[in-house]
Image 1 (tube, one colour):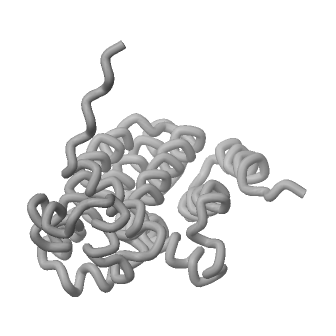
Image 2: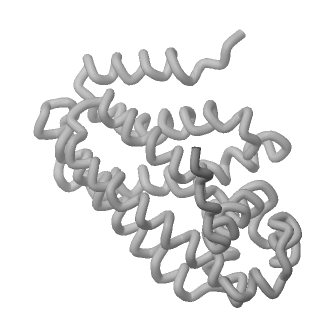
Length: 220
């Protein structure tokens, strides 16, 4: 059986950097630590990514590429079940790239490319959530005035963007650990969708509460 070709060094660097950034926070991870973790020389790392910002930008571009198709899926959301799946999937992607959100203000203050691109990410998320709301409205799942959609969508994006920061402040020792991640992401989806409660058709409201009971209640 033929052996698999070794992964390209540049891709391995990205994978290890993402893992370290997620575990320790980007400001706490040096290129020296990354090269040591990879067991390669700093020169080999610099050959592929001459500056730490280039590593961050490459990871962010990869995140943007994954985010685009996911946001496009908002067009297919028609009810609470669809919206729950959409939000949870979106939170999973955010979790996989959580260093961007954990250290967001610091990263934006230092990286002009990230600053401008993240502004576009927020616009794309807001547009996707408005599409989601419009689809649910047309399907009869929500009754919302078109004049309320912009503010509601923005509020949902704010929770999406800063939920992991809230979880971290609430429980700094465990919030960003893998064993607590799933429940944190489910709570995030719950609180984003809870903003729709005033607008949900009664059956849809009951279904949302049922999903919360099923997925967000810790086992005793």
